[in-house]
Image (cartoon, rainbow over all chains, first blue to last red; front, side, top):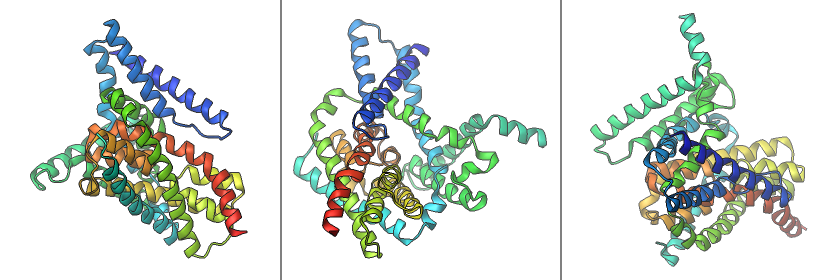
Length: 118
Length: 253
């Protein structure tokens, strides 16, 4: 179990580092795609390990546990968002935070219809 | 009683596990027994958590919603960016690299479209509400992208602190709006496949909102949405204070 968790941690740190480096290289103080890189590293590691025959259900359990914990983390995150000040920072914040969202839903619908992704 | 309070204070993260577990259990029962599973329990739990976040803000007058009350401070650890990102990465275990690669171009297109749509929307609304200077317009437009792009952009181009606060507020409202409306509109807009989820993550961008919205829609889609959404904030921080600001400045002459 702990080996899987270590593998997840390794992918996470490597991905975040890549994101930081890319951000610094682009000259901005932000992590660019760190989570995305970490996910790709994890998927590649899984494929590599499977090929070598090192992958086991016990190892996967360490990662699966966090996968299952994901929704609870999101619930905790929602409860610790600054909802009050967001809603009270004025009508403009509420309008500029919601109207483009609906517009984006519409753009998404058109994009998906035109491409028909798998 | 005092000993119990001390115990809760010392073990915040464990208390957060208990609280979230209880909430999930209650909303699951409510979803099954009363709503006949029409709305997933997790969607109700996320929505209720937002309501609690609001109440927490009213009671404690802080910045972390319910987590500002001493009893609930562990929620900000469990729901903080470290655990959030770690858990998002772990969802990749259920994703297929083949599908991600196949929809890579669609993901990239949607990222560019998404940043453009939200920035433009924010700028137009700020204009309608009376802002006329390029710095404020650009910062609010950036805030409409995410609550990180807003302050990063505002800081870079020298916006006033009220405008920066407004841009953060705008970004948080966006996260909440995406969280609530994704599960409601998912079927209508065709959000039902890994490829569509990747495009969705790119267009909406807010990793918290996309992650929460997809979790309430279909947890299998989460990794695909997250993998593109994670590039959105970085890309926004790149183009908003540079390219978009220059264009706005030029337009306002």
